[in-house]
Image 1 (cartoon, one colour):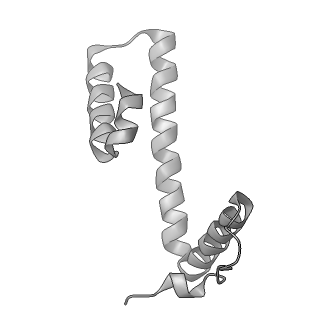
Image 2 (cartoon, one colour; image 1 turned 90 degrees about the horizontal axis):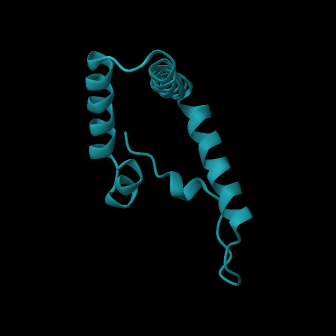
Length: 96
């Protein structure tokens, strides 16, 4: 089922360019609509992102405190490589 979300957003004014606040407000409204229509998918997605970020931060903190083991280092390198491969070229330079 394909839904045209762009038609649900408030119409843009042709007279003046959009300000950053207008763009942010439209993005927030769009996000609210998606969350209202797909609450389970939103909840699971946010949970997964939080779990991934928590795991990465926890492993980084543990590595700093206890020193890196070869197994933790290999896992960290694999995760970093996977994240680097998923990002656009402009963002990859920040992970080098």
